[in-house]
Length: 423
Image (cartoon, rainbow, N blue to C red; front, side):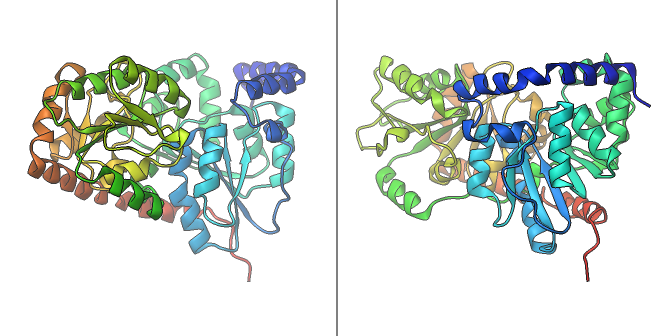
C-alpha cells in the first residue's frame, strides 16, 4: 500500500521530469556532471547488459564508492559467472572507480529518482540483487526495484540525526522504503537505533570501510617522491576542508627550524590554487602537484591537488593530520585508510561521523587526538619523537587489521541472496 507521502513524492518527481535534462545540463556546466554521460542520469544505459545474472552495487560519492571495492572484488573472485554493475551519483566517484574497479565491473551513473528514469534503468539492467551502501534511500528507485522482484540489501548503512529527522516527518514512507530491504547491516549502533525508530529492521553491523585493502600506489611515483623527500620529515594534512589548511600551516610554522615539509591533500582538489595562494600569503614557498611540480628541497609546502594519490602520500608521511576534524560541521574522515599503511595519525576532535571508531582507536593508542589550538604542541612533540611516531603507526596498523573480520560474516549473508550459478 502506498502512503500519502510516497504518493505525493512520486507525483512531484513525475511532474518535474520534463525539467531534468535542463537541470542536468546546468550541473554539467558547473562541473558536477559528466556532459558526455547525462543520458545515464535519465536511465538511458551507456553500454549493453551482459547475459546472465547481474548484481548491482550502488553508492553516491567517493568515500562510499570506494567502500564498494571489497564487495566488487569478492564477487568477481567467487562468482565470475555474474555480471557486476556499480552505480554512483557523482563525477568524482566515477573518475575514482574508473581507476579502481576490478576488471569486468561495469560503471554507470545512477538514474535520478524520477519514475521514467527509474523504469528505463531497471528495464535495461534487470538486476537480480541490488546492494545499496551507506545512506542512499531513493524511494522510487528502491520500491520499483522491489516491485520487480529485485532482492535488495542495505549494507554499511549510515544515517545522521539530520537525515533521520527528515524521514520522521514521513515515517510511513520511511518504513515502506526500509521494508523493501531483505538485509540491513548498519555501521554503528547509533544508525541502528535511528532506523529502528523509523520502523525498520536491523540485522547486524558492517562497516565496509573496515574491509578495504590498503590504498593503491604507483611504484614509480613513490620512488620519485621518496627521493625528493629524502632527509625531510613529512607531515601530511589529508582530506582537508576550508579553514583546516590554514590551521595546519600555522601549526607547522610555529615549530622550530628545520621545519617539516607540509603536504596538503584537499578533499576537493579544485581548491589547489586557493591553498597555494594562502600558503604564499603566509610567506611559505609552495608548489602544486596538479601543475606537475616536484617538491624541491627549498619548498615549505606541497599541495597534492590530484585525485587518487592519497595512498602515495600516506606511504611517505611521518605524520598524518586527518582533515574534516579541525573545523566544525564536517565530522571527520575514515582513519583506517592511513592506519592500514602504518601512518602515525593526528586528528581533531570533531569526528561525529566516526565517533565510535575514533573512540576505539584512541583507547588502543592508535591515534593522537587534539584540537586546533593544541595542534602546534602536538605536532612539536611528535615531530621530535620518532619512536613515539613509530609506536603510534604500528598501533594503528594492528587496529585496522583487526577490523576486517565482520566482512566475512556479511559476505556469507549476501552470498545467500545471489542468484544460483547455472550448470
